[in-house]
Image 1 (cartoon, rainbow, N blue to C red):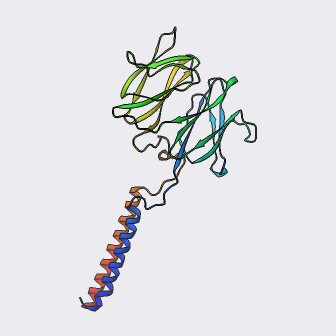
Image 2: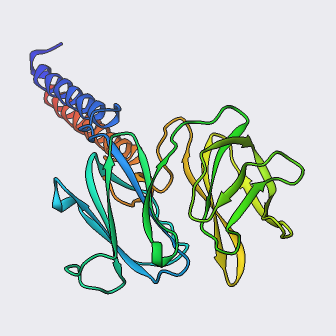
Image 3: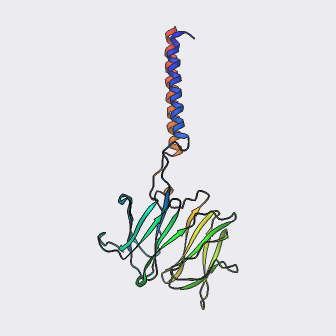
Length: 285
């Protein structure tokens, strides 16, 4: 190759190497700084006669990580929020009350990495308590979902829950209590909720594979209603309503964004190399 073409060739090679490095940094998983291991918190108001509250979650070690969920009424269950591992105080105040006012009730949660918790106001207002529930992130066996029952209904202070004609998912579940998780078959089904001396109430339920659920019984307009909340799903053991849905947390560049940047860099290199080679070729004529 003539000597006057070597600078252009060297420049094109340098640009190509730079493009490859940029593309690798953008496209290779783990190139971005790893986020600290997270825990997940979810809030619930399950006290039928307690008015709407503002819920304060305060980090003991980092006040900047604290947050407030205003206007939480009976039957409300928040999405999960990703939080750093540590100790948190969860407090309830009447909706609109100053943050400096004494809380109606409070409790402490120890959030450890890789765990999820639901902090729920339970019972009647005269005996209101905050229950810290350990939410399951364990994938159920193939062909099953995993379900627990939370009874927040005073209409049925003690109930049996299960499909018609099948084994009960939970028996004698008292108001204000939560059962353990149980593996159950998949698919849409009718859930029967029955109490002693009362005709059972039929409620629709649909369950997906590899998913964990909380079935919450609540009072709605004087009748029994059921809420089905997905606690976790799949082998990634990331609760639904966590970082992916935008309720807290931060993410690195998306795959599409990174691919677009890499393509733009490659196009720039190609154009620059073509220009240099043409310029070099024109000097030989």
